[in-house]
Length: 258
Ligand code: COA
Image (cartoon, rainbow, N blue to C red; front, side, top):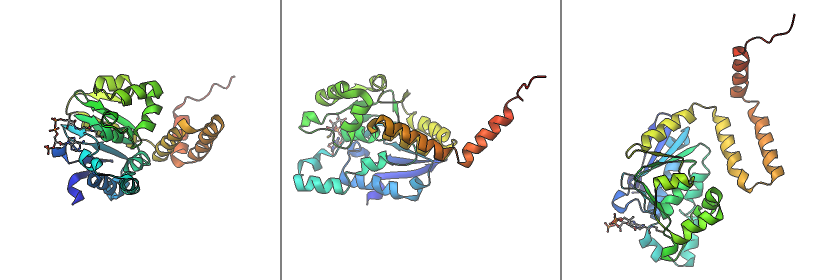
């Protein structure tokens, strides 16, 4: 039943997780969230070096399913976060790099899903916005938290309180998307980036990602300590030793004097 809501395919070293509820602009119902969670548990994602999340040409996602939101009392909301509402954090915590390939509407919870990825590539005609406050709620799938860290509190208030729609170029100016590409090109560009990431030493990529994610909340001492400990571990990997050896080989012999 949920399988049809998300399509997962391997493309080289990457897994592509495509939302397939296009008739509802990929509105994030609990069934769709469960389908994303199932995709994360599947072999294609677990064995991949990079995960690309995408939607369709009309919508990456138009946000939480407003029909479902209407019927939730406090107990149902608590149950929701215990069930499928945590999937955004599971995406954010994936050990391998993740890329959002965004076309069309990227609104509300859909934008929050995109913010949970490491890189966001948007097509020129993509449209972003956080309409939650306008309907009496707020972004609550990690979006408020991540937005503040990406753009600061003043910009976050502007985007969340006013809820205005903005285009891909504005999203890039705000630092909310990594790159803007022509329409229909986002998945292709994401896969190029995925192959580049996959060619890098995997432990260094995974550890660097984890260390960067910990930094905004780390104290100076904890942050520097984490960096040094991570370095201590990575420097001992075969990839680091090999890279150091081949670099030394390529260097011309040192002038040692007469
Ligand atoms: N939840 C549930 N269904 C949604 C949805 C959402 N967030 N967004 C779109 N849909 C559904 C529509 O109800 C419609 O279904 P129907 O064909 O069965 O009536 C279908 O998707 C297509 O949407 P439609 O509104 O007809 O497309 P549009 O091109 O005229 O408008 C939007 C597109 C995105 C502007 C409009 O759908 C919209 O404002 N959606 C809600 C966005 C939102 O508030 N998201 C945040 C929720 S917290």
